[in-house]
Image (cartoon, rainbow, N blue to C red; front, side, top):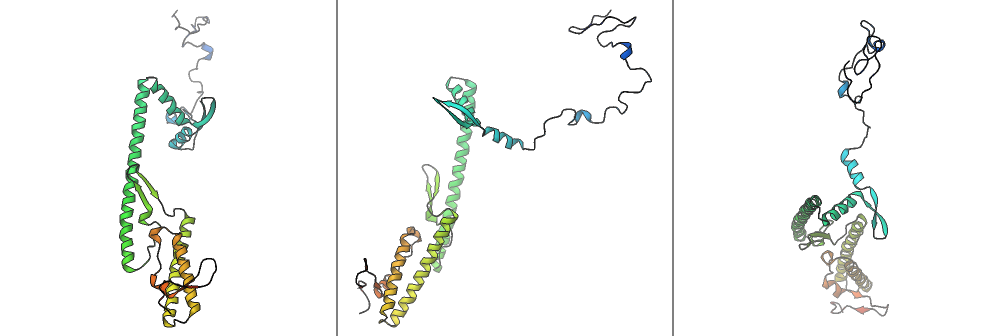
Length: 268
């Protein structure tokens, strides 16, 4: 009798048939010529199909799933408090603690992580500075062309509004940035242009007929309005009024007192 393999169950022989490892009882063996238990056989490719090794179906890209898990909040203890921070941040803390304790793998991992983070930050900073310098150059050229042709600079961002801090590598916008701020800024510029045009038209009427006292008062109010709008704009957006117009106007006095002729008036 053959010795059964280790840890296998040996059964008592049935009649003259030995029963044991790889030797089922005769009654349970397949009979020659009997119908097969699986007449169709193994389907082609079943070993490589999903049915052979079923996995849970997840309709989420792997990178998205990884980011979601990395940003999943976990509880950590900070002193006497328990706070929630992203899982990736908790992992960084654990790695830094191990590195501080002298773990060479942790020191190597944190060195690689911080080096890569610094390199990416430097690359983004250089790209931002390069883009800002290119914009300032193009905007200044367009601004000079606008001044030559006597038209308004109609870009949303003035080149002087782009501030570059070469020490920190930070690029800031001093002008309007949101949609609401740009809409308000455009309204002020349109109002300033319209008021200056009205003041010039009023000055023409006064030159034709210097006795139009009400028109001179109106011109004084328009000049005052131009000054107020300019005060609401940055210096590089301001359009000061022509000093000659002040000489034609009767400027309103502060506090609602008597009217006063403009200093150095060109009219009697």
